[in-house]
Length: 397
Image (cartoon, rainbow, N blue to C red; front, side):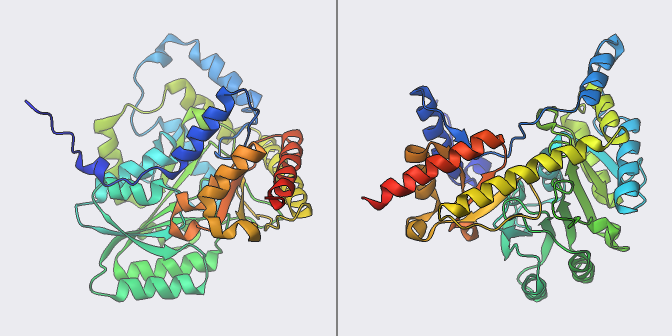
């Protein structure tokens, strides 16, 4: 009997743009080439010692190796509630308004599955981190795009979309500080968005994975600082960037009780939560000394300054980001017409430098590449030399 290999949810996904660059990167390395990899937002700094020590201590207890609970242990939910009070002056109930997730990505995807029916419409900024649209597309929703810049045009376009009878949206996804554009939203912007979404009865899913990676004194707010936000909003965060714990897979959803309850229920069918020693160590991260967060932030800021100044010096002008661990760089003028994917391929082939093509974050990401601040200062300086040589040689063609 012939097997039907048509899987509807898989068919809804487009070709993965980054796969081309990743394949080239793997091939270059197989040939012995030293590729300087700015392509993925994968923190390279070590997890702070006191967090690792707590993991090692806890893992020696045989009881810690049993199943955990899918919504996270109470101590960790309390620690996240304390963080919200300390950082944003927002009170949240650790029992009904906080859930631990296996990274923010898993939480958003599972909530999309929990609240979305086939044919529902969801508004997602463009460009955007891929899980933001595709978490909902996989769940059966249709995506309505809106420009990701957090300004008055966003507010006007949101009004326009929601006031149309043809666009009864279920939810709006926000992500500030934004990946990939690095933009920060103001609290006033959040207030306007909350007012609109309450009017049209639209849920808000806000991703603040980069809330603690900010520079130059511009501190990102939480949408939950808006007094009425918990009526409609849930916010996703992660320890991956803040404490350099990407492989630990610890994140949170905080906010609206109905959304937290929906996520709690669907997770109860799918997982038993993170490994208990990982959760206990995560409590040490949130409740312990926070100097390590300042140190990690300072490392990214120094790398940002070296990279932006160095590339600008060789003719590739780019805006210095106020937040995140990325630089969102417009293509150099003479490469603009070939597009971000082809430019990324050339940069990798001739400069041995990997970046993420902007088109991979949506059509409005075209004309840009995302550069991750995930290589040390020496490697960044080497990348600048490599790219200069590539630019110089390219002029001769």
